[in-house]
Image (cartoon, rainbow, N blue to C red; front, top):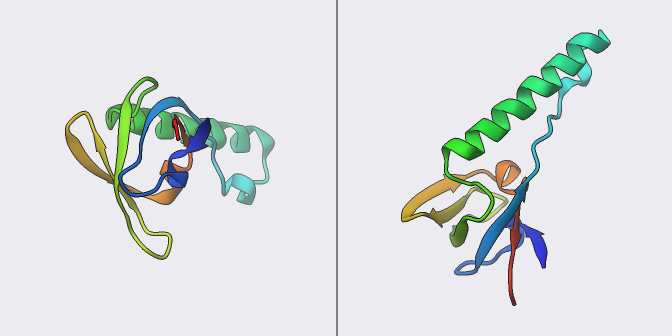
Length: 98
């Protein structure tokens, strides 16, 4: 079952199947070419950030703690603890066997 990382509860583990990076907030630019460039640059930066954190397809991820009021998630990846925001965590799809 493929779910966003934000759907996992504390202590649940999943394997990353895909990452989905798109940008939001670029509607403020009126020129279409600039809008496309900004959207592409933001998506590329998101993908690079996830890759730098080690959040690549096939990686095992465990949710250690979920902060209340839509706060960040503390996750365990490759022996390291990371805190990532819900926006970024929602872009990571994981395969969970329940």
